[in-house]
Length: 176
Image (cartoon, rainbow, N blue to C red):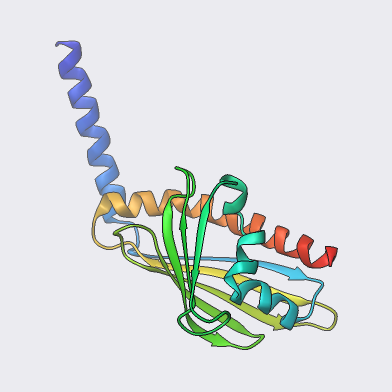
């Protein structure tokens, strides 16, 4: 057998294994990251719902210090929009506030390129001397098995980014 034939057979086998994994992977992903922050919900809410504050602590600002940010609409309100253009690690996309409950919850629609939108949610739960912040992401990966495999691989990265973001948010609020 030629080396080329063995290479093609290996690639075909690898692609088939990925397709099978994708076929049996769920279409939906949900990621939840929690952190208790020593601040009141109103202090945290303004950092999340005002996109000009959000960009000061989100984890992606670290990955691209030259990211270009655009803001549209009334701050901290339904329909407020944030667009970014970044390097390869950050990419291009937008976030739009689709639901607000003052000092309790913010829901955003995320768009990355031509793919399906995802939903990010921040839930704030008041504790005695702190606030429990739950940052969630929900996405429908569709029927394409390769998209499902990539989505599963991205879960670990997104979870890590959310942890970094909540740490940065906590540090920013503790510095004030």
